[in-house]
Image (spheres, rainbow, N blue to C red):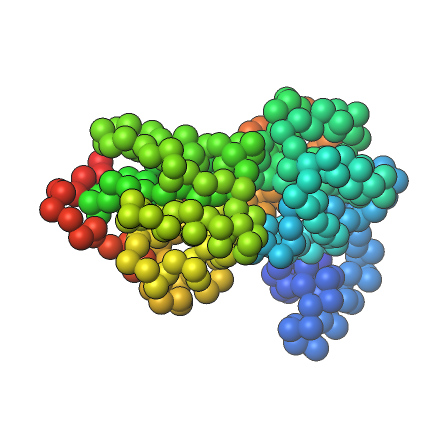
Length: 336
């Protein structure tokens, strides 16, 4: 059976060009396209992954189930996964799971019953027990949130360390009253970031004010309520750690004109061009989506590999203009 490398050598082009032609990319020169098409025909090329999928009775599709396709973080994961899928002759289908974990199982199982080649999942529930029956039937890769049970691949970020980085950065600017605003702490992501927030305070010897911790900020209405709660009295915070990019998008327009520093866990479009530009903890969703799709492809091509890996990626702080020194005589804490 001919390989993509054979086709590329036959046509005198790169393997990437063969992939682009195979996937009907319009940005290939006509003469190059004709040469590659002729090579594909002459060598009777069929992608290995498609042949594997057809033998298994599966569609050449990777299903992607994420909390919300409008969330820029998860949208970036899906787009990156789609680009990798296209390079291997696969398509993707994307669906939103919503905020209610009770709906997750029915949505995910409806996707799996379509017999996709693989599934990339960002679960809303902490107990994916229902997926055990599918573990040996289709490659399933978790993103953002690792499964609580063994037998699945996952790609997540170090949420605790990200929470520490964000909080220590604000402490280093002299802030001692730092609010924590996030979504659900029932999710391991939210819980990990809150743990990092508390850890940074403990290391610095600064007490945590429990009244400055607000969760379940999932929409504009709850963001407005959070702002009213935080800034209603004379003990308002001087800084805010928004522990979720989705929450930040609702929260930041409401507080960016106030004399308060803000840092977000998660970058998003426009974060670098708003005034002031937003300092963020970068999760690199493009890398997560790419790695997840590549793992799905690897599992399709090598189904005999049984060992599953949980990969935790580091995060990084991208400093912009939204974090300033507090107007106080209290000395700043220098991060290690």
